[in-house]
Image 1 (cartoon, rainbow, N blue to C red):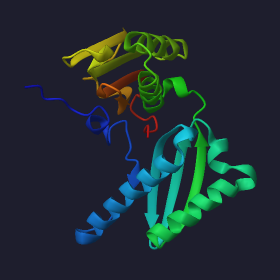
Image 2 (image 1 turned 180 degrees about the vertical axis):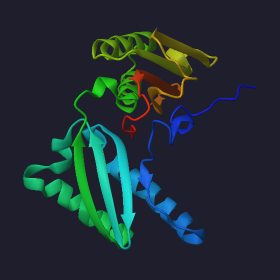
Image 3 (image 1 turned 90 degrees about the vertical axis):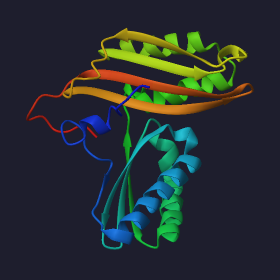
Length: 215
């Protein structure tokens, strides 16, 4: 039985920082944790076309500060800021707190594991060959300047009767090195044959002591 460590959790406090930054105790902690999850699910549902990768959440008494990292910030902001204002209003109604929303553009989506995984999931749902989807995504990521990438898919690949796992690897992926800046994400693709799981690791280089933490 394999014992696997989450690549981000393994590096928290060393080269990675938390994406939720607040403090609470007892029942308040459970309630705020559930609220964080609801916020992320709501934003993910409403902004599917915006290429949302990460949502940072900071809290103060009766206030919530969100920082949305997305490949297409224009879709989130909308014309004259209409879309982002509607999003802020709906989140304030849901949480009963003042909400501030900042949007940050992801300039190189090929180097973001979440966006790469979602791109592959979309291609698999459109019945593109899994080998072709993985190989092209890996090539684009390496051309964008990554030091290494590994993509793993599992399920009824190509409509086969028995589920199996296939993977593509290019460059280096030092998963045991704490200073290695590895971006990791997983997602699922719902195909006509069933659900296919997708995992992506992207190695961007090393973060040495004294350098700022990666989110």
